[in-house]
Image (cartoon, rainbow, N blue to C red):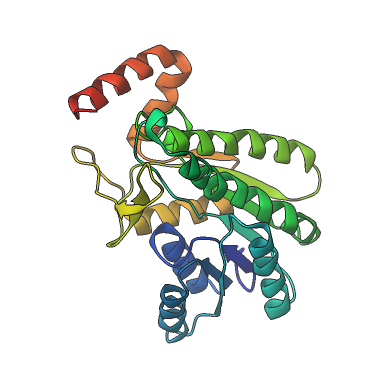
Length: 267
């Protein structure tokens, strides 16, 4: 049985990376996918590519860190397909730099995209998702398990998702709504991926050296399988699972290991 056949799914941040791969794999399963991102050209290119393969997709160019843009995403999806079954909060941005060095204008940048964007759109879509007995999946990171040096704001935003998801799951218990949280591990970067510096300017994202990176399509398949099982929480990759276990046993030890690792990198 294919639980995603003819379902309508909104995927934020789906013009590239994990979001794009998720969109492709769900569309292959007969899902109607609403693609979202801030780069209109990239969105159109993905849509043309998918439509040429016979997939049912539409696009909404919008910045989910803005409440009115989130309204646009939902309203466009409803106008196009008549309903929405699932929301995947995938949009996110990272920032590299020490907390004390981040400029004031850049402080809210990461929280707005990673946390407020997910909160805004989820809040707006909840009545529809509950009525359809669908679901909402939040894409977090292993950075949301234990704060990472040089990525403190990103870690904070991803940790905040845990509290949101736990509260939402309790509040919607018995409604038939699926609520899930995925801790994605170190994943291969798509060419051209960027993060932000301490001034809020985009800079190239470089793959983490010395670690085995999980391929994007493999991550996407794992996320879909998680949704099929309606699994509450899943931690991806061996390193992510190990970090999760050790953090429960001794967060002090994890703190020590991370501190030593980042010292070796010259931070």
